[in-house]
Every structure is written in C-alpha cells, then in structure tokens.
Image 1: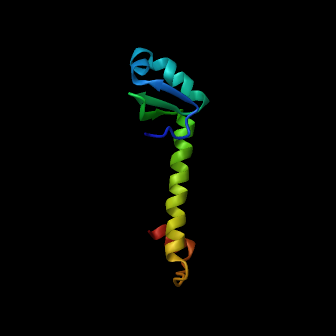
Image 2: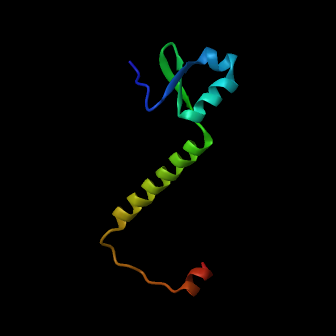
Image 3: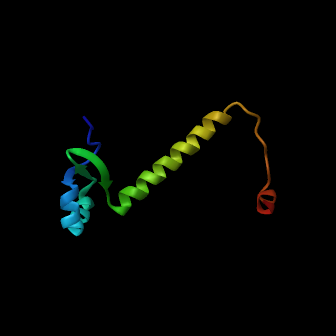
Amino acid sequence: MSRVLVANLVSSISELKRSPARVIEEAADGAVAILNRNKPVAYVLDPASYERMLDLLEDYEDMKKVIEREGQPATYVTLEQLDEL
C-alpha cells in the first residue's frame, strides 16, 4: 500500500478534475495528496511551500559539497579576482 506523505488533506483525481480551483485553494493550508484508486499520484501545494522545498533542496546539495570538500586545502582569492570570473 502507498503512503500519503506529509499531506494535510486528500482529494481524488476525479474531484481535482471536477473542481481544480477548490483543490488548489485547499492547498493554501498545506499539501493536498491527489489519490487515484486510493493511491497517491500527485501532490498539490502552494507556491510558498514549493519555493521553501526548493530552497531546502538547494541547501542540502550545498551541504553535501561542503562535506565532500572538507579537509581539502583552501584557495584564497581577492574580491578583484572574483570579479574577473
């Protein structure tokens, strides 16, 4: 059985087709899981939550790079050298 992850509300795909504006409006309160035959097939979320999710993913990728480079020698540059790049 599929799990519904971090969704405050659920809606059927039929309901999404019937009333997309209402489902999108409900997403303002948090993610809405869209179910097809009782299995999650999509999530609808508000723009702020989506942007926050992308920011967190970017932070995670940056942290992975920091950990990979930990212990490597540092390269020092001046602000002028950065401007040349």
